[in-house]
Each structure stands twice: as C-alpha cells, then as structure tokens.
Length: 64
Image 1: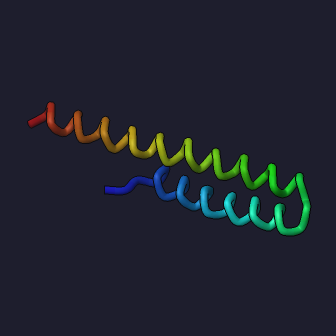
Image 2 (image 1 turned 135 degrees about the vertical axis):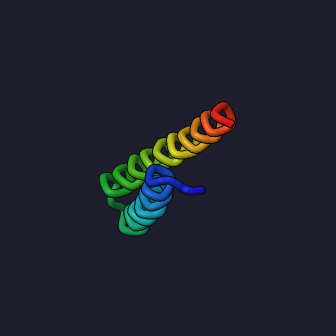
Image 3 (image 1 turned 180 degrees about the vertical axis):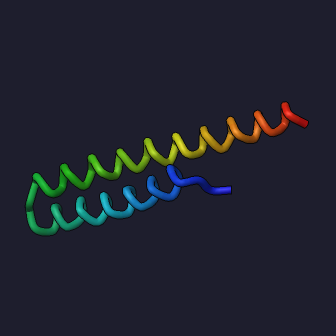
C-alpha cells in the first residue's frame, strides 16, 4: 500500500532530477542545486512514507 508521502516523494525525486540535469546541461549552478535539494526532499518524503506504512502495519498487527 502506498501513501501520500511516498507518492509525493517520488514526484519530488523525479522533478528534482530533471531540474538538476537541466542545470548541468545549461551550466546553471543555481538550478542544479535547486534540483538536488528537491531530489533530497523527495528522498526524505519517500522514507517517511515507508516508515508510516511500517508503523501502520505494526499497529494493525497489534490490533489483531
């Protein structure tokens, strides 16, 4: 099961990767850095989403 944070995280990873690549191609260091930051934000969001899923599973298992 996928939650909102996981989906948003993947979106930020993709967008950040695109920005970073565009920055590299154009020589725009600011855009490259923004892209890397957005990609890292996506990594964190995705990890948070996975942690939420694990906690929910544990809570569901306890309730059984």
